Length: 218
Image 1: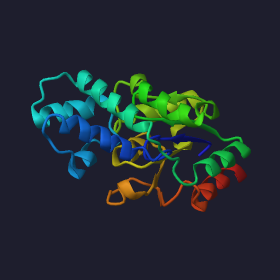
Image 2 (image 1 turned 90 degrees about the vertical axis):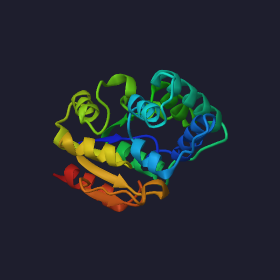
Image 3 (image 1 turned 45 degrees about the vertical axis):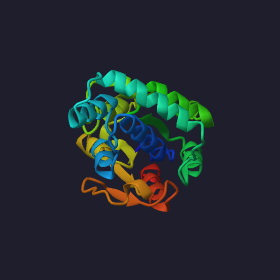
């Protein structure tokens, strides 16, 4: 654990509710209801998977790219209503920076969405880099994004601590031979995370710092 990779939505920021509103608006415009079952099916997955899933489920005539653009228009609209950082985010960032531990963001969201979210709190500059859906060919639960992150950080994937909130992200981190840490919140409290090495209730949980501190001391 010589470096840390952060997921973004639902992990760094309380944006899952924004995604819910945008998906509900997208499907509601077509006479369909967005449900918890649908949400669980797409949580943590890249745009192509999500919108192809909607296309197939509801026999929608649009391309997945058209559905993505429409959904993101809704997302950016609802994002302006406000959203909050998840508890403990800034405390953990300060800890990592005080220990000079490299960090990056690995998200399934598009660059358009990521730019809007991160710019609200001016956080991109605090990370070495950000990997988005456009930077990979195989999205979570495939390990590609975390393997690529480890390479760019200059560490073995086994030395990478990954902070996630979705089952797809946890599976991706485990498949990359990284150290998956799941942070539980309202939107994922019913999830199953058998691949997690550690499950906590906040980004500021002392157990996260303890795992990292052991590596520093060694």
